[in-house]
Image 1 (cartoon, helix red, strand yellow):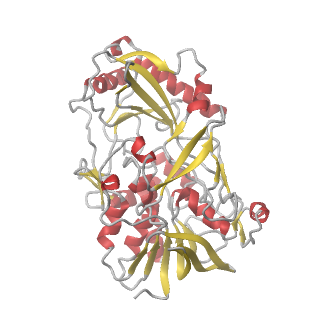
Image 2: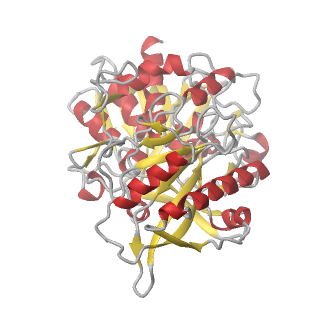
Length: 503
């Protein structure tokens, strides 16, 4: 029988939410309720379970929400994606298991967030993983719930274009970096993934499934949280829709893990956010926090496509490595991920060899806005991608590096002339008109001290001005990491689990 009141209610069964539910329910005396807006399919369908790292698999998934966004260059529309299924983003992402860098976490700590430096977070990062390649390394874990392995190790036999790509990158000054999860990665790096025997290791698989039999863990899927009922500085009830009916639950503590889009939306619909924005929509202001929905950041991607050689082989499988490239030599680690993509052929045309660059440090800050008080209405996103001239200049530098690499005479056997964009194009403008995203939105409930007017949560992840409300997901990141955000979000879940156990 489900209790009338819970010790902890977790809103969102994503990368952090599943982690927190599993960790807190380890205590049989603690009653935990996990609410997930999407389904919790059992067994997990092959479309989620089987490892596929192609972007088209994500965009075709029925378990996502697509947020339309407008490019600042030509006004064209593209989409930001959020997972809506148990496991959240970890159930639909590309499964890259890449850590935040030392500079990422030390920067967070320097912004007034004690306990978040790299050295302080390293035990959490180790606790998360079982690293199959480096089980004896002092910086890696060997008995954590998340399996991590690199499908390609530098020095292994590689397909011809990949081997040439690596050799040329090294000739241009990039060092070998065998492990992308070292504190400050730079150079030709092997990318680790959370895949085991061809199966995606989502937080559903790694964390939640082993905990499902606990009688104190209560899971409700397809439960869309519409608001938090607040009295003074406490959340008294969590209101959600299930099977078309409005229901509610009460908890001593409430943890919001709904992600960078849904967490600020739920806060604002509940009266926590920028006062003027809330009043504009007739929402009663319970806690005026100007930073809710602000500070939005993401990873912009730009692709360049080159002709492939005439004897293109469709069985080429590009190994998963990345070039961590610095557009400025003074940076402590690479601020671009440069990735060789699998070659393709369009009937009647030459083989096409794409290469992409992702800017993993965004200077400009975007924002999210409520369109209405309807919880089913999608937020409006102003992502501010490439509006900063330094961001555009950095992208152009990375594109020039790619061009110089693949157009070098040593690469003629694999890469032909550039197809798109043209070599004489304005590459900064091309990036503004065509950029995509790695779907790594963060920052919209920023962590910071009360003295920071844009901070939403403190260093313990408690919402400023609230007694029993926490946020733990990608939205609390003050700055976007130089890495895919999934592992960092799991780390955030581990961190809050410890804090709540100690409280």
